[in-house]
Image (cartoon, rainbow, N blue to C red; front, side, top):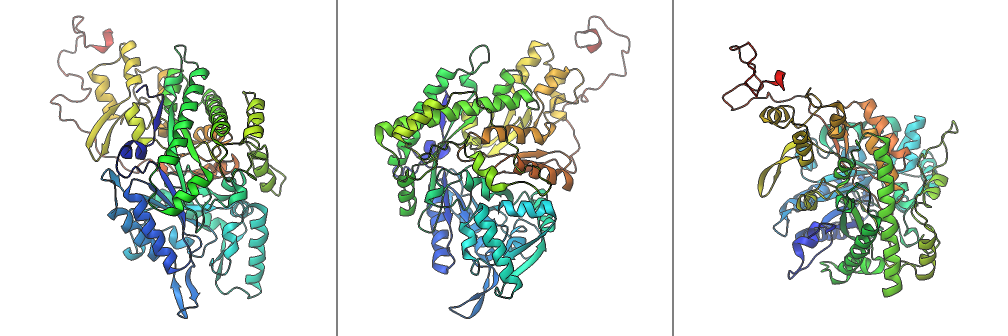
Length: 604
């Protein structure tokens, strides 16, 4: 393989098998009755069995203490069922390749949100804890506005406010405020008023303590969705890059693949647009083929996938490409490069989908979509801006760059004439496994460490940054002492004095890059993506103030979703070596400089 493009892990795992389940992601909505709840759990098991990653929308399920008309009893809420979901994911092995994995989503107006935030805590009643399952908050813009204005926020049970789940933007705000008035007038039985800032503070504290729930934004996902006419985006998926419509009758499916960015740089380090165009054309055709030959373990997934035909073309090796171009991640050059690369991928992916439509026909639910109205991903930013409005002081609540380098006119004309083959074309997945196969840096991630040990079911592997080794050898700095220094400093080059400053900037690790640069790059990419991106945020020495500023910045920059919040440990293990000689020790004997000792650093 040339590694120009790589299909997702399930496609690699399951191709040419009896049950060729080739899709990466499944998104479901759980209905508010026992039949629906256990049907959803059963579907999770069937989908995970064949290596599918799962995203469940649990917002419709009534809250703790809500009235149950059939038995005249009270509901136990969402959490006990999530415990069953957790254990099901652990019990079902993904085709013998890896553990089942699921992420459950809950909107922040749900009465159970406070208990939902504590699902991964190690204290409390273990029957109401899910130690293996992922979780994420589904946050409407109205909540963020209430936080900014330091106002109250009202929690409801969805059995009394059922339509909130299907509303977004101005419609959501209008209906939500109407329900607040009804609660004040005693027309709603179960509700709770809390300071929005207090809930926000807890939402930021829990990822710091437990890694969950992740923070994802409802309104950008829906207002910029090409499929607004066909339904509502109720959640994202396991890795927060898929934003597709779901309902009780439709299970969203997405087939993923990633472009190897480094393979599309020429000898001078410039992006080879012609080669990228060819790769995107082949990739989109392949992803579209997957939809038709895929094995679907449940009918709702098949019906949805054939109706909308979404795919998610992403990229990997972004950090490697920056190194090849000698651009530090923490720089405006990196931001501009992220913008340029994503526009190029988006341009050719969308163009290829429209060309497939001319050859094979439009996807069945095309009419009424943003595509059919001539609205491309870049244009949809205006829809989000209009709905979000401005702050009370008149400042903008959306700050997104809108420059374009390509001439999109031919693509617009082609779509107007032939339509689109796929409802969605773009999504940036984490690519943890396929990046290893291709030998490149994962997805859009900065370098985690220049030297680290990776563990998986096959064992432990030492991973060393080959670009760094090459540069150090070129400069005559690669020796035994450097190896020990990299081990001692956990793969960081910053504390190593003899490494020059420009190399330190180029090989800065994830926690040494200010997270605002990650958000800036992601914002530039997001304007070209019709779905979302798996964006990990790395914060060294985290604090409430830092996290508050970071996530508000992400919201204002128009991001749809965020993924893991990575933080540095509060304590570190003592460093030691099994080598007989001390690490970097200076001999107490032979203090006089020996000109024939080639290991003497003072003479080199």
